[in-house]
Length: 204
Image (cartoon, rainbow, N blue to C red; front, side, top):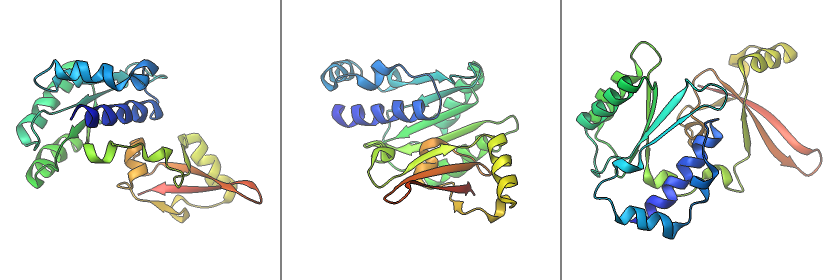
């Protein structure tokens, strides 16, 4: 169990780093045996909670919650949301051991994500984070464009955003980077002839 959580937590730290949050490299590099000792000393997973801030905006923070119960229902999610409101943290991620019930996903998560003020709660299965998919040899490098870069791209090629190739919001890479609808990513693939091949996709 400790080995599994160790691998998931390392991927979570890498994911937060790649989203632009301030992550201590020591957390990513922590040895498994060191983590296992900590893990054995706790009866629940509350101690795994992570709170980090964006490198370029300290007020933009995110919580990562680790429920102890294998199946997470509505009540714990609402509790996490209360914690976010108390600490004025608008974004949260829940790492679950098993798939949440449809009722929990549709009721609690949709309520939070549809609230005015930019509240957002995501969830990942542990199994999805055992390995970092962005490090796989078949996954090209993705770069999120700023709003200004997106406008420059559309103007340069004289096109509307709807004409761009699409990338689904639920795509594993899109979820890893926490992308939102309307954002554009630059995808860089190696090319034998040109050195690299660049394409762009609109998140829908």
